Image (cartoon, rainbow, N blue to C red; front, top):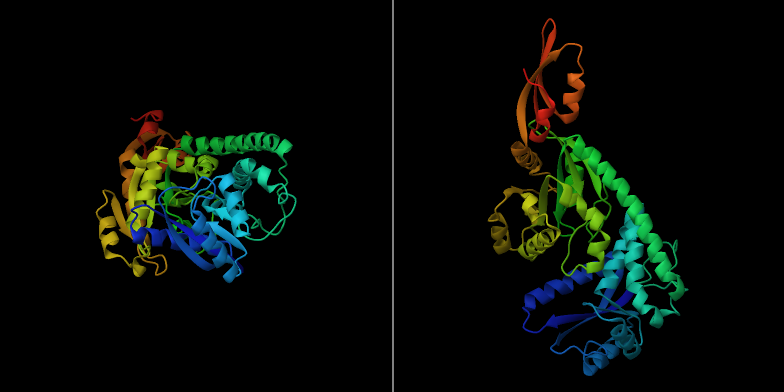
Length: 411
């Protein structure tokens, strides 16, 4: 593994515990890229140095640390300008990446669908664009580390200055085409009246594992941050007989770069368009409640916070912070405690999802001639409870979405 010097930035007056949590989170991000932190430094920055972000004395100490531990790259745990990045590289004598570059590389590594890869390529192009002046020598070759973690060399970054704007326009057009297909599929689902849920939450909270447990989706579920980025939607049947759709969405994280939120706007639309949102919280996280707050803030920014109906407190077999755990249980949602590792709580989650559908559905009774196609029509829009055949008529009792009930003539 490549050795990395990690430079942590502690905000003035910031709690030491929060700083430590952010450091551990960044180490987990780097581990996802198969990078090893050989030396970690923490600096409290009161006044940001316009040239190198950190002070000259701090930069000198970082250089000595990099040499002493043979660090091949430095990662600064914040967002810095292209100029600061270039100047810091000159001072340290090794490549420097900021938090945005790290997350971009992870997203690129884990994006598999055409849409996700297009979105990441555009985000990366926009990130590199202001850095081209300082990185012309690096664009024609691959290297290890953060910006070199591009898979098996299947794609080289050759975004020359005169071509980058054209490439971004091309990516925009291709992304819109893929989004149009996604939008059409979503409209078909909505027209069928099937209730939809979206799984949201902090990265690595267990969303994909829950999706697999409920639907046998077979989605990759690893103990890594952002293990999967591609939205997966699967159908399931709830205990009340109601059909539903369940979608996994990209995980959130503190200080998620704006460019990535914009890049995955179509993926996050699954949360916006869903009838109900399920937040998955990781009870084993040292700052579990802080992660929930970040998730709720992101959902509020997306305009989807009012759709949250269920809070799943996952990994209850590994609780480390009783205060956060108690705070999670006080949230104003249906609370379901689960341990996917132990297979606990799945039935309770399905029951909670069934309850969440109740306010959107009603029971109706339809009577029509025997030769009508009422069974097929009702089956598409709802769940059939019973069918009674008469000599010339058929009577069906069904549970259906309220807004679709007017389509059927009741007798």
